[in-house]
Image (cartoon, helix red, strand yellow):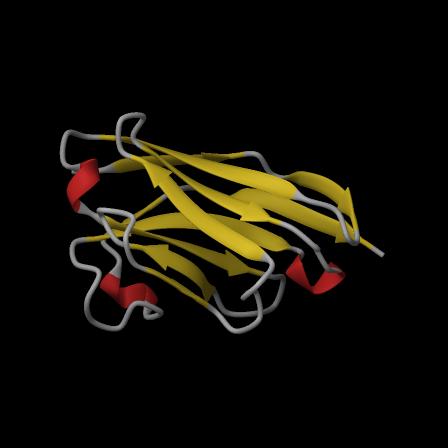
Length: 125
């Protein structure tokens, strides 16, 4: 069982940066791949990034490549999403999620077993 709590969201101007954190409880956190998704009003929840349990493999949605970086610290049971060069279209509720294996359909939200409650990110133009 893994419980996830996101933090770090807020209001930022276009071009600015934010760092999201996702704190996990549960002894098996370090064995899970961790992902970030986001959901804008009126839109479906979409994949943002994922990192393997070792941190050695990462994958990103095309829309955030080169601007966002996912990382994790297994000693702190925490995964991060550093977001630079934010755009108004990045405005959404951001969720972290856990999946048992990095392999498979990493962008498919149905592959993820555990979800946090989300944190709001708003980017003003």
